[in-house]
Length: 395
Image (cartoon, rainbow, N blue to C red):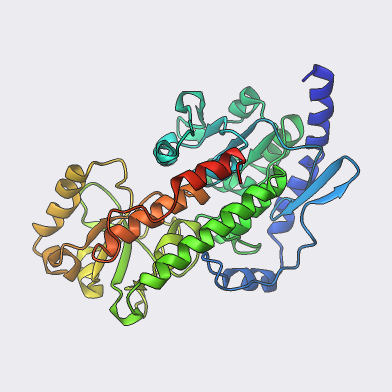
């Protein structure tokens, strides 16, 4: 690509800069009616969801626009050639669509790229990815240095997590490239309550429209529907499914936890809802974690008394390390040892918080094997070759 061609391309992409800032501001005053509609949706796609958006991917001449809240419509003159995703969910989406890999990500260890090693003929180079989160911040200068064609991330996340302001978002959108993304990990942040959330596959479809790879999206959508359908057919009846508790240890002592309700939405818990787990928090007054630092202690955990305990933040540990640092610690505690899940040896690792379509397939398979070991053996529950073929365009 010549400098002139790149300038023309970047000019088109920058056309979404003003729209991004306007979208951020508009998102803060969106109607509660739209919010209520979206938060009732499920991540599995089982429930249809009304939408007030116009037909996506509108094409005018050589350009096209894709709309997503909170940015609104962003204009493109072609699929972005380089892009950067803050979270692993959007990095995984771009990779799944055959758009290559992200130039950078928040923290590489939170992006489960080791799953890609199981896909025949698919390679990923971790050394080519810049860590965006450094010195307790995500600095604007890294965006200038990467000089991407698109930033796949929620602009409000930069404002509320990393101290950016609207002027910072506008500066990067206009001087480097637009933002396109919606924070879909969870649905409990106050700053996100006034504009719509998206399920995993709703967000994935938007990204597919950006990269003009809707054929790959359709193939993944079909594979995912078949995959979930096959699992659902093998699940025990609802009354026989374990009352499960999803928690994140507040520290290494494993005596206090951040609680997560399974059915309050969010991509990070999709696999547990797809496996039909009963939420042990149902009927209790324990609130879903919202980033405010509130925790629950072992006494509260015993009061809830789950059949299965799912512990997040453990994926970097080996099986032996998890057994020693979590399982054995709970077994040796006078209070925790009385919990049914501890007594029944039903303590499981909870997987990565951010997941796109590829990572979600692997994490759902792992969760099924861990939580229902008598039903789902170590056999693969989806075709790795089929996933690889979709990524490479052999659909």
